[in-house]
Length: 257
Image 1 (cartoon, helix red, strand yellow):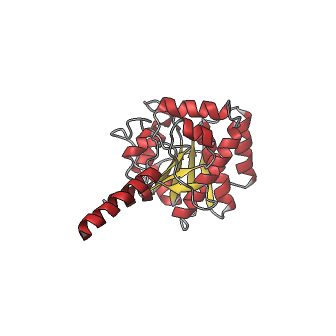
Image 2 (cartoon, rainbow, N blue to C red):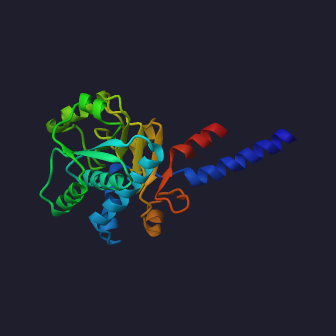
Image 3 (cartoon, rainbow, N blue to C red):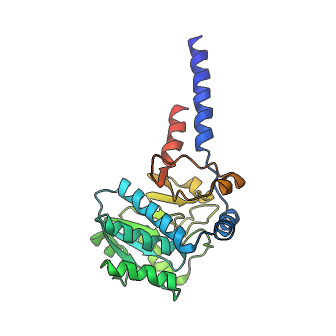
């Protein structure tokens, strides 16, 4: 009798947890379509979304790495790199000591503004990157090279930089997508292995194979109607936080059952 009641209770808890944690993992086309709707139907601007995303990334990093103040932020030429620039700026305001590696800049005014904002805070921009530089000078690496529009292979310009990230002994925090991973199938044989992943808007399919220590969803900006249309099943964000742990929810289900 007790076992049957206990089993029924566990079954109820299981359904309850799954109903709150079965977040939709997006394929590449879905991620692109959601971005298009955010810009067109919901009238977000690119810089607005970057600010919201980069701030959530900085907050999640502070939560997980409160004592690793020397941070190298690696930025690519696209929107993912813009998220990284915003993240670096907020980390500086939080008392961290970020440096930025930004090897392929763009003439786009938005990115020039973001770069200027970082420079105005005396955030240094470094000109070269290898594993020795990372290991000797930094506590943490933020990977903001490539976002969900990335399609393999890695361009020749970035090959040595990705090699440095693969070889470093320091923890890596990837923004939205671990750079070099296939957005849908995940880590290639020579891919980086980040310790932390901060998914944005909704996690992408490659995140299902992420086995690092921390996995967060950042942003808290998705319109409710958009979330319903794409059946994203986003989790509840705690309090006023703009990031929420996805790793904890998954671990809780596995622990109980």
